Image (cartoon, rainbow, N blue to C red; front, side):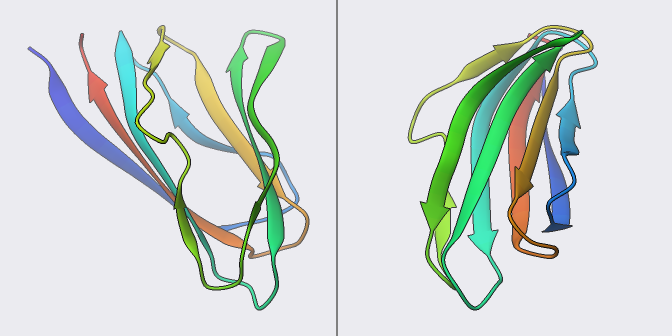
Length: 104
């Protein structure tokens, strides 16, 4: 049976941080990023499978106090163990919410 779930990450910074790890066949249906810093910031988001990293967004700029829906209606299919990872230029720059459908 498929289940909707979400994963929240607060205070994303310069250290790459795993936003979500797939536990079964999963579809990413939403990825929101809120810039909680006082200036425009870039954000990188990538898919990690084993030792392979593939960028979903590279240096995507979000204005101060702005929230962006980074998926823009797209979907990403993850296999068991796949990760979504992100980082930005400074400490405590973004809050992130990932929405998924697990068990597909």
